[in-house]
Every structure is written in C-alpha cells, then in structure tokens.
Length: 377
Image (cartoon, rainbow, N blue to C red):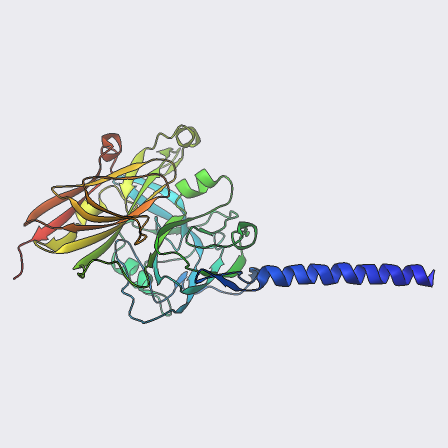
C-alpha cells in the first residue's frame, strides 16, 4: 500500500512539475526577429474602482492623435473600461451603446513599434458612468470628450459579459481576450511588435452584435524608424468608418436590428461614429500642406472605398506598415478590419470631401469634409 501511495505521489508530483514547466514555458518571454513574444498569463479579479474609465498619456478622442514625445521604447499603463452610454449617431437617432471608454468608436491609443502595453479593463456595464465632465487622473481623451460631446452622451446600464481583442497584439486569444462578467477586471501585457493601424473590438459572441453595438476602436502603432519620406507631415488625423444596424424601438430610442446586421444592410455608415460630425466639425489644413490620414474600416461587415474628392493620395501604406507603400492612389479599398496610412498634398484653398466611393454607403452617411485655408508662405 505504502509503495502504491508513493508511486501515486511521485506520479502526481511529476504531472504537477510538468504542468508547471509547461506554464512557465508558455509565459517565458522570448525574442524572434527583433520582436518580443510570450506574455505573462492574464489576471482576472474584482476591484473597488470607480475612477476615470480611460487612463493613459497617449489616448485621444477621434480624430485626434497624441504626439509621441519620447525616444526608444516605452512601457504604457493603459486602462479602457467597458461602460454603457446612450449616444446620438445621427440627428434624431439615439441608442444605448456598448462602449470602450464611453464613445463609439472608442478612444485612439497611439504607441510606437516595440512598446509594451500593460492593459487594464473593468466591465462596468452594471453601473452608471459619466464621461461628460472633466476627470482627474484620466487621459487626454477624457478632457477632449468633456469639451466636445458630439454624441451627446448619457450614462446608462446594461449588464453584459464583454472582452477585448487588440488586433495589434500577438498573444493567445483564450488567455488575453477572455470574456469577463460585469464587475470583473482583466489585466494583461502585450507588445506592439508590428507597425500599423489596428482595430480593437469585443470578441465575445455574438462578435457581430458586440461590434455593431459600438465596441471597437483603433490603435496606431507608429514605425520605430518612421516612414521613409524625407518630409514631415503638417497635420495628422484618424478616421474610422463603421456601420450601425438600428431600427426604431418601442420608445424614443433605437435598438439593434438583428436581421439587418445578418443581411449586412446597415441603417447608417459613418465616419468617427456620427453621420455628420466631419461636416459639423471639418478637419482643417492649409493649401500646400501634407495631411496624413490613419484610416481604419472597423466594419463590422462592410467594405470601404476611401476617397477624397479633389485629391490624389501621394503615398499610401496599406495597414499602416512602412513596407507596404504605394503611390498616386485615387481610392483605397479596405475590407472589414483593414486600414491604411495615407499622405495627401492639399492642392489649394477650398473644401475636400472625404467619402466612401461605394455610394450606397456615402448616402447612408460615410462622408466628411477637409476644409483648407490659403497657403501660408
């Protein structure tokens, strides 16, 4: 009997040792081709936190992009909580959105190739969170939203499990992208191994519904050596195209239209979350300036044929990666979750219309304005 118990104990010990070795092997960092992989296991826990839903130095509200004022690689501490907000997406059209940080799309995170991000996210869908007032200890995003509430936010509650999927991250989805319930928090690390512009979105089924309900945003990963252009751009903007599938509800609010989403028949196709925002608040430049657009088609399902009426795209980097350069493009075709970084010379004073050249989408709202002033000599 003692021998049997000893053998069982030894066997269990060997199994546990093997499992421990496997776990340590899974979480041990390593480098390959100058990139870092093998992040520690994600943590899921509960916390007594009711502070700013968005925290981080380089997080902004669309169409703004925070300048990177550091050399080399940086370790970013980032928080983007999940909250429910009643928002306006077009005149007279409001619904209760599931959001990252309180807006649709969510905030823009700007990092540099090779940076490490420690990310924290609390599922606060079961509590009312106000984002329209200045918030201490937050991010540039929080101040910008407080100063520019173009979606006319109102706090709301709709408890629901959610998750975060950063396309810019190279990690195991079953660990880092795991679903958390209301009141839970997840924390994990990832490395921005590849330059480019990347969507993030909720990965909890139905992914179509969670994304269409508003859970998506953009991470811009600037190349560590920049783009090989020989010039500096004068203006830099982030433009996100996305779709809403909404139908009139029994009350004043609109609600998610399952059948329309399944048929890929959006009620609205918009830039930066609102049907008229880029006309009401046009992007600005001057004649002779170089403007850089980081354009992401966040879908969730449609394609985008991004065009600027009156302009030619001088240089285009597909997915924002510096190796994927093209020249002299009239239109950039972007599938769902695809992106491009686009440089354009503003030829003269006047108005230039940003548009999805798939005109059925343009007529549903996918248009905007770049307003150009006179050339400054």
